[in-house]
Amino acid sequence: MALGQRASHIIKAKTGPDDPELLETLQEALSQVAVEDLIAVADDLAERHDRFVEGLGVPARIQRLTPHDWGWIARSSTVARRPATVLANSLAQLDMVPLVHELLFGDGPAAMRIATLTARLEGVDLRLRLELGTGLLHYTFPQDHWLWTRWLWDTTTQTGILSLLAGSTHNLQTNNVAEGYRNVGAVTSMSMRFAEGTGLLTPDLTAHPRRQLFTADVFLACAYSIYLYGITSWRLSREFNRLLPALPGMMRQLLGLTAGAGSC
Image (cartoon, rainbow, N blue to C red; front, side, top):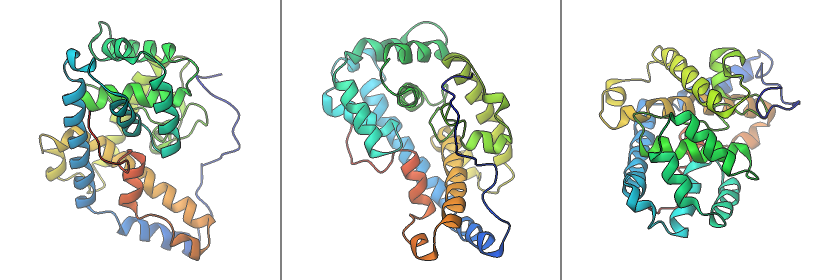
């Protein structure tokens, strides 16, 4: 059985019947997407990058991180408040300085350093470990590293936007963290070729020196938000649909941008 895999009752091959109401719902979701939304989220991620560099970009600075800083890092790395709290509580009980120093500045390929970090955080949910490790690398050095979040590819439920865009889970299957990280990066790159035909990747996003570092993040968050909006709206009544956040809000939640302000 592949890394983290378990039998799941969640079947996401189809969003629902091909009826006018579902089509209308999906069109409503798509109509909420604007290039400006992606640009705004990319700008926020660029600001997050600045904070990560300020707190983690030089080895000596890691020593000065406070419990408040670790809480902010946890909130920035996970997709919901409760997992962020769980992660922050776990980090508070560990000596994270040498672990983070090795992850960011250690020798060897990044995939192996992520595998080492996840192994040393045994007892923490694997998805949280992966989100923390890849988030630390990506937001500190975004030009060289990528995210691996549960909404990109969840090894437990075998679901995520990457498998949906790829049309298969085949290229994401793995038995170890290092290989899994490389696979997620490869499928992310393939997905961006699909993104080029959407009209959302304008030069204001892809040619901007800061925003282009987070183009994949914002597009994939947008794509998954549309998917979630479609299947959730189909299953709920129209009254409950009004309670759903708009797509830009969903994107921000997926990327942990709803957390309160703070810095490293």
